[in-house]
Length: 151
Picture 1 (tube, rainbow, N blue to C red):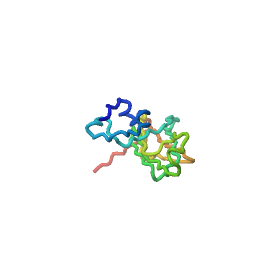
Picture 2: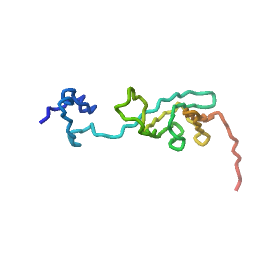
Picture 3: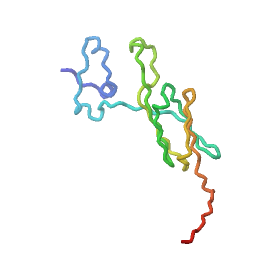
Picture 4: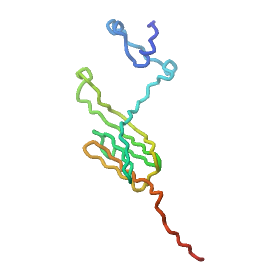
């Protein structure tokens, strides 16, 4: 019977150095033992810059390595959600890495907008891995004359 793992060991899935040297491998935990630590595919969160010009709200984010057709951008009048997946091609074995810091897998980011935008006029452009989303602000001072028709 193995000694009970520490919270950190259960959280990260690490093995004590002494156990590894003795060849003792961790046992698979059941879903009940994992509780809230169930293994799920984690989603990365994109870093974004959000700023405004007099007419637009601009969102910029790096999506290098993702094809434009693999990006999913959902826009409402007050929120933008960007989703995608960066696929890793396995060319190097894990033990051959000195540093491995790039993020591979699914990612998403939801940005709450500071004011309403014109959804139909929004545009997204990807250039050299930089995604730029241009969101025209609603012009609240714009007025239209409405003609009354007689029936």
